[in-house]
Amino acid sequence: DTGVSQNPRHKITKRGQNVTFRCDPISEHNRLYWYRQTLGQGPEFLTYFQNEAQLEKSRLLSDRFSAERPKGSFSTLEIQRTEQGDSAMYLCASSLDAWGTGEAFFGQGTRLTVV
Amino acid sequence: TQLLEQSPQFLSIQEGENLTVYCNSSSVFSSLQWYRQEPGEGPVLLVTVVTGGEVKKLKRLTFQFGDARKDSSLHITAAQPGDTGLYLCAGGSAGNMLTFGGGTRLMVKP
Image (cartoon, rainbow over all chains, first blue to last red; front, side, top):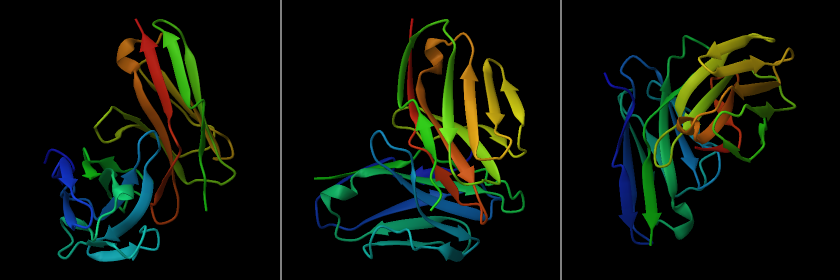
């Protein structure tokens, strides 16, 4: 296992299109997080899962954003009807919930550009 | 809402100089992590501190967690151009949700 994997690394889409990103966490990690990062800012929390349960989704930016983790392994983040303001780096991270320290390991991110 | 403020936001120094980056909050965190991020990449974990007053050293980097677990500092000795990057602090809370600061962008000139 080489760490958290995100696909695609880059995505360019036209405004109004739907996009879906995939995250494969470190295999023994139960918790999976999605963050958004805009240029020059720190990552902004979106949502997280413990196994297949989505425990926090109130921070998702709008109802155009949704995330799933159907089997408690990989996760997808979908943005419907994309807008130019959605252009950002979308980061996925995973952690071992048993540690209780909040330590998370990040993937390389998916950079979304909406034109 | 828990907030973390980092200072300075930008720092440009010459190779060989020392520097300190600060991470402050009005909230108590169960743990605090420091990450380093390079352009176009995800953040890479440097260290986790969990005990108030804890000090950890990683080669030329020294991390300290405040006694009240509300603040932290990162000190780099004899900075090198390879230290250039965005340094992020993140506080862990109940539920393991990490709250990030805005980052300190460091540039070390040869």
